[in-house]
Image (cartoon, rainbow, N blue to C red; front, top):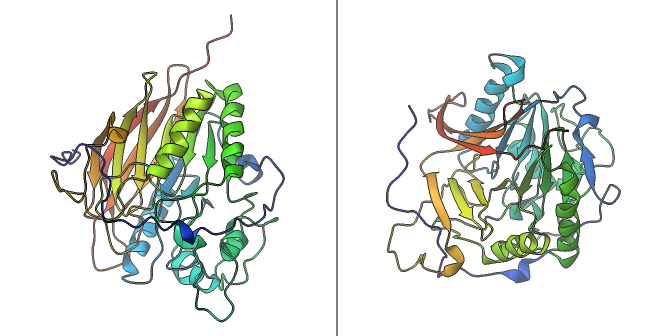
Length: 380
């Protein structure tokens, strides 16, 4: 039996005492692949089934303080891959929602925070960059360029050993850019890059690319789900960040301009789990999922109702409902997209870690949600 949804809080919030540090914006690295920055998953996973796809999602897995949490999450995910009841139920890859390492994205941070905990993860690992992955320590003697290490790990021009992976056998991935699209048999997964500032920042060039990508997915509607991933959360009810008005504006104006709306939006950045539903003027309801409790030690609490420091009365937050949340323990998502003659669905299962004093903690099902994907009309 699933836990009962937490009471009281039903809307996202804005945080009054939050500094919008847009001066932290970092230039984007050049792409490593060809425009329009698509990666066909079959180039990496040639045996992926055409009617069912299972994968993990989580963000904010890094951190050096209390490293047990990131190991517990990684090990629980590994257990789901190796201990599935059937191969069809085993997650085939992990899509990371950003903040792979803390506090700055230096190369030396990748082994203890990423390569070591995920050494035994059997599938491919894709990622979008988070603010900590892209930040640069300003007082270092020879500071690297923003995202230098992230690009070596995830956006290489070919698969090969990573120099700072040490004894890990995981090779670099070949994502073509920091913003890109993963083409899969059952979903178009658009990965966006929202930079370093606290509430995110999107360049005009990336927005233009995103508009074209949204329009380009129309040929796949009814055949594929449309999934959007970006690190900074447009909607959140937490006390550390709150909602990002910048990400709200970016997504909402793009959807309105193209009249193309995704099936689901996934975010990290906030260190907890939150599931929102947003209903647009055209009647479409979209889940916005925050899954940023992937291992960083400190979790972010949900704001109490009527707290004046976290108002929820802005019209920008209307028609956005907090369906469920977990702010007291770490966890991760298992996503299943399945297409049959009767149904085409995206099923999300959120698992929480049963914290113990060792790395091999078990995971328990905490929340379930289903997104019905509109199917293409059958040929006459």
